[in-house]
Image (cartoon, rainbow, N blue to C red; front, side):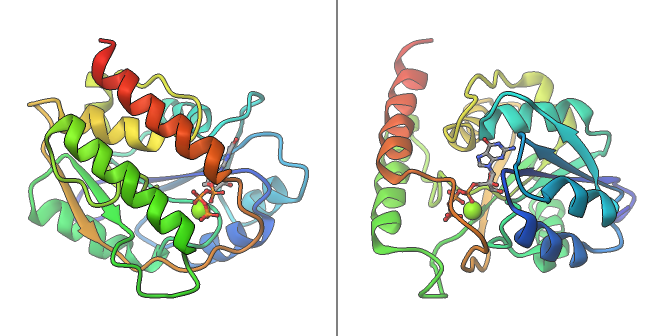
Length: 224
Ligand SMILES: Nc1nc2c(ncn2[C@@H]2O[C@H](COP(=O)(O)OP(=O)(O)OP(=O)(O)O)[C@@H](O)[C@H]2O)c(=O)[nH]1
Ligand SMILES: [Mg+2]
């Protein structure tokens, strides 16, 4: 519980045995429920997560968005917090994020990785790709969003009933922000966090996911 709000943390994982151990060991005490959604990892992700007290849900179909939808269906907290299992997002910033969420009186708060302070954390190619996608989203949806691809959010679980979440892949991250910011019932905010280098191997394919995410933005904007 944090200031009388129960907290669920959801972490999608695909072969993140190293990162998930660090993330779970650093989880603050006030978190009520930690859900790890594993898509048939071939390493020890599931065993490590269970041994450190997380609830592990298995989803047989691969995909970042797919994993989140499974996690959301199982969550019970008033507030949901998300992050990657690779230790790149700051677990120790959870109270800072929730404080900001409450202070700003928003329903969905996205944690922007920019400006990136750790030089090793993000390659120049990824920075340029992220900038291009965030600019595209901002123009298409008439709202300045600094980091459309961030994977760390805090939101009131009850807003999920207003959202139509279709992406099963990496585009899920921009889709949930679009659903939040274009619904007048949902107050959207964004603040900056410290982003660091991931442990383990990336699951992101820059060109494939970059172009798919760009195409998804156009589809979401023009095919209603
Ligand atoms: N369950 C599940 N998790 C996934 C899948 N693909 C990626 N993930 C997880 O989603 C998170 C984001 O994937 P990353 O590879 O870190 O992608 P990224 O953060 O854009 O790229 P990096 O900069 O390399 O970290 C990580 O925790 C992954 O383990 C998937 O198909 N299923
Ligand atoms: Mg990552």
